[in-house]
Amino acid sequence: MRPGVVALVVVLLTAVAPPAQAGHGSKASSGDPDNGIHRMDRHSLTSLGDSAAVRGRDQLNRADDMTATFEGSGDVDIYDADYGNTSWFGRTSCPDGVNWLTGNCDVFKVQFNTRTMTGRSAGDWLSLGCHELGHTAGLGHRAASNDVDDNSCMRSEIWPRSFDGHDIDAINAAV
Amino acid sequence: MPDHPERSAEAKERHSFTTLDAMVTTSPVVVRGTVVKVAPGRSAGESDADRIYFRNVTLQPDEVVKGVAASEPVTFEEEGYEADGTGYVVNGLRWSNVGDQGWYFLDRGEDGVLFPISSYGKFVLRGDMRGPTGHDPAHEGPWIGQPIGRPDTVSAHVRQSGARK
Image 1 (tube, rainbow over the protein chains, first blue to last red):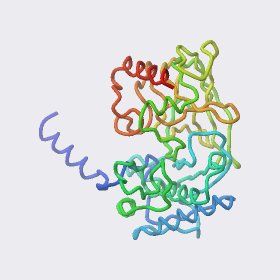
Image 2: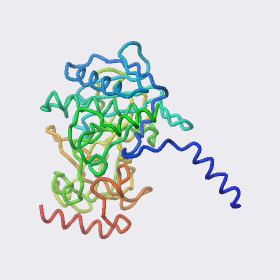
Image 3: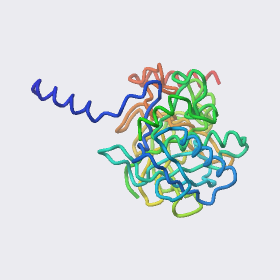
């Protein structure tokens, strides 16, 4: 490839790259939200699942550029059920696929596994709600190396109940 | 059902390992094997909308470090398919294909069902995509610092970890 063409490709790739998210971990492979409004449906949740969903909504609303609400529908579907013995407590997906051009997801699906959460505390459910709803805002997982205060619910191995400042900044950058 | 996944799900996992030793120690089953069969498995969920479908993967053990008999095939569950049949992976845990050979680090549910203990719980030695599974395994999880480009060394480490259990 000629040097001029290489330079053009670099410029174009830079132009469409997502904004930098200093201090945050990876991006969620389930995609970014397609706008700053999350209309979320709770589908026959258990009381603990409902408390998780409420926690997730409240945490999302800490970001200035995000409005999360249970009024209306069409952006996030939330379920809980006995999904059996899985390696996970909760999962977030984009069943219709992430737009390959924009990296956005139109409708997210969040699932809490009541089987693997059996015996976990009510506080852990709040953390799980924060974590999975965080994925619907484009947040990936945090590691101990970039959450030295152990205060991000996007960690997998501990159970904080809130986003930290880096999470909030990343949400505002994603929407 | 499709023969390859098209979607990727994010998940908060039950185990977050930072060393290979920890993954070997915690896994009830550690086996090097060859995939001889992949078939549709159970489904779970309370409605058509949230239903997920699993894949049953059968291994013929080539070497057992712990947890199963070397002479018997081992079947474990792998995810999966969404409600509409679209294939997905969780946290970068790639699908198994017939003919793959690798190390499998499996958990066992109270119902006896085996499943990968972590999205990092597979190291493919022979197959289309060799090496460890999971998101960014060279920089996150139990494979950090492991010589993942030298599978013989990885295998030796797994055996040594198993011997210390």
